Length: 87
Image (cartoon, rainbow, N blue to C red):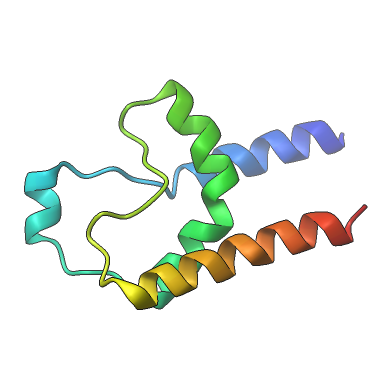
């Protein structure tokens, strides 16, 4: 049952990852800290999906720089610390 729940969670979370083209990214509003934190949290799932889908990326190219990066690393750290704590 845990494996099925995990698979459903992975599929749902990976749907949140997107990959706009460079032309689309130029016209998009830059994303900041909160988007970075979310992208950091879903990185492991988005990475797996990106192996099989060219339309999925693991990092937003239309970010605002340092604050996005800070959120990204905090989100990734939150994910990895929660995985480590569950063991």
